[in-house]
Length: 160
Ligand SMILES: CC(C)(COP(=O)(O)OP(=O)(O)OC[C@H]1O[C@@H](n2cnc3c(N)ncnc32)[C@H](O)[C@@H]1OP(=O)(O)O)[C@@H](O)C(=O)NCCC(=O)NCCS
Image (spheres, rainbow, N blue to C red):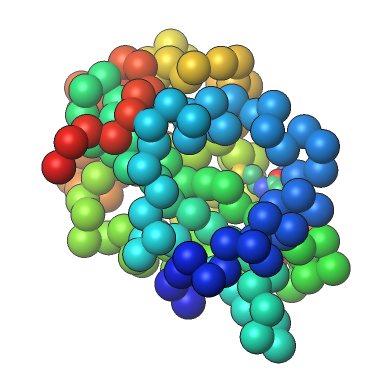
C-alpha cells in the first residue's frame, strides 16, 4: 500500500534491522541528505498483521539538471525476508511511478533489479556524492529514449 506518515516509526525499526549499523554510511544516504525529496505517494509499504514490515521508497532527484527518481531505501524486516515481499514492493513502486515518465536510479544488486528492467549505468556517466560500486549502480528508463543524453551529478530535486 501507499506509504503514509503514520508508517514512519515502524519503518525506522525495519530500516535499522534490515541495514544494521551501516545504514547511514551508504552513499545513497548522502543523496537523500542533499535534497532528494521523499515522495510518500510513490513509495510502497508491506503490512503484516497491520504492522509495516517492508518499504520501497521513491524520491525526486536530479541528474545533470534533469528530473529523475531515486529508488530506496528498499528493506524488508529480517524475519519477513525471502518471502517475495521485496520483489513485490519494487514492482508496486515501479507501477506507482509509471505516470511520472522519469528515469529511475538505484544502487543495488544487479541480479535483484535486472528482472525489473534495470541496467548498469555506463561507467562514469553519472556521479554520486560518494563512492559507489559501478556494478551496483543501475537505471531504468520509463520512456522511449529516456536515458539518452542523461548524465552528470546526482543532485537535489528540481523545483516543481
Ligand atoms: C533486499 C531485500 C529488500 C529483499 O527482500 P526480500 O523480501 O527477501 O526479497 P524477495 O523475497 O522478493 O527476494 C529475495 C531474493 O532476492 C535476492 N536478493 C536479496 N538480497 C540480495 C542481495 N543483497 N544481493 C543479491 N541478491 C539478493 C536473492 O535471490 C533472494 O533469494 P532468496 O530469498 O532465495 O535468498 C531484503 O533482503 C533486505 O531488506 N535486505 C537488507 C537491505 C538491503 O540490502 N536493501 C537493498 C538495497 S537496494
